[in-house]
Image 1 (cartoon, helix red, strand yellow):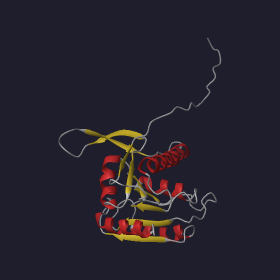
Image 2 (cartoon, one colour; image 1 turned 90 degrees about the vertical axis):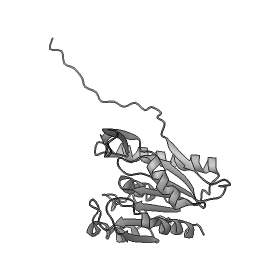
Image 3 (cartoon, rainbow, N blue to C red; image 1 turned 90 degrees about the horizontal axis):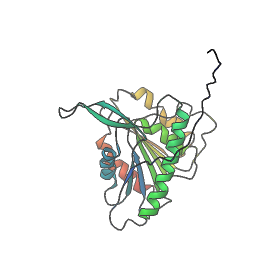
Length: 229
């Protein structure tokens, strides 16, 4: 048979659960909230440890897991592969960006409701791959955040687009001087780019490769608390 066939691409929308972990001291009412997103191949548990070190007893935390899971080789001798999580690929990135935005909004609402955190003092922090996604979120939703923190990551490639607007939120960008993916000559201009849409931008560099600079933890904590005053 030589009957012609149609090929029609369609979509269905289905509800999908996205896990995240809440962490707060007892009596967390009124505390600022830090929403922390891991980088490529990370997970919410590893990011939770970093966020808790930043938070101490003064900040509530929500550590979020990326929606896309995959196998990657293990560096230990116990297993041959591990499960990692990510936020998007180059395939239809707009859909992944929209999913990220809805996920962050949902986590903020759920965390503030359950922990009774201060909705006026919400900070979103992203490491590596999550960094530019968080900037996309922050600079298209003026008033949604008190601050946004990017660590060892980039800014949106289309940051000059008119969809990004001036926001009242403060911005802290943390870079690593020996980062093999985000070299200093690439990251240092970020401060000026971010400063075009935020009047409160802080840029900090720390020694080390593409890992979360542990030396930055006390500064990030103080920066968050200073911006809650």
